[in-house]
Length: 424
Image 1 (cartoon, helix red, strand yellow):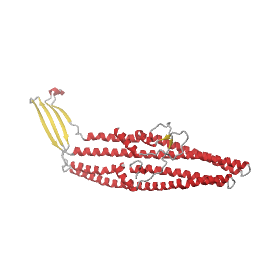
Image 2 (cartoon, helix red, strand yellow):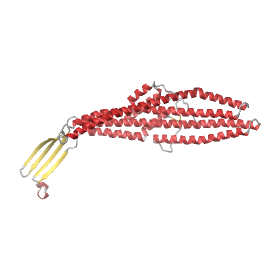
Image 3 (cartoon, helix red, strand yellow):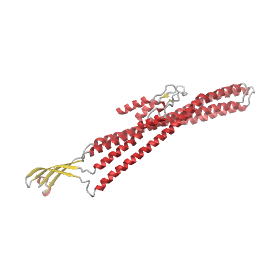
């Protein structure tokens, strides 16, 4: 438990969330803090808990590997007349213990410790996976909530257009078609709102599942940082992944495991020892005394040596496979990081264009079109075209921001380090 809280503290130290938000907020909506949701998932997510238990199970096996095999205690009565045990001619009590050849227990303990480390890396990999899923669901919730707020703002704007069209129609300055087109747009916005609401509920369902909350629990309004930051270099990400990605550490440890298996297999050529202590009682000979016995296994016997050779060969094959697997994993992780890096870089440039150029110009165009329509200098169709262009581009901006944030979440997972976008 102490290790878990230390890990949570270190994780939170790496997560920096800007308090200023680039999100439209619903009135009286409670904001969701992604940082606290991550802590909650670390504590309550069943997948993380199961991986943690697996790690505990493997650590419990280390003590077992350090121990000797159970001793054997024998009690024998010989030549018992009429099954009267007290009248047996001979009685023996024998205690036997097997001792492995020196070094075998240490090697077996090391193999068990390596398996425990594997479980630890699997646990960290599962944490990586769950946090990435949490971030993906969180940003999807953000997008759909922003789309709903945008929908309501567009409905307000379209009702303003409708009011202008009705006024102009009332004085004979425009046709009924303008009024009908505005009404159709409002109805279309209502339909879009139903779709966004359904997707918002789906995202909340995913979050509740990850957090292991009840289905009846409620979630507030997702927010993200105002600033679009992506300043890290590709080389830094690749180097970080070698240091922090649990999957790479897991596969790197396989090489150490392979070498240990080879050493263990070679130890199998050496014998194990049996030592016994026996107490004998003979009523016939009136003898009471002790006997000490010792024996060794014969793994080098001609009819068993092939088995030991096969164990060594098996361990060497495991080591070759471990090297190939590590190379394949490293290539896969590096390729994924490069792909996600280029996506994030392109997304950021597109977002900058949206924020600095496209959206401001479209807002100016719409304002001008509305003024011209009110003054009878343009048609309602031209006004509607300007409106639709702004609506579509604004929604595209939010979608591109969602894609950018989800790409960063995937990049964090591939690197094995949180909030890599802010690193220099």
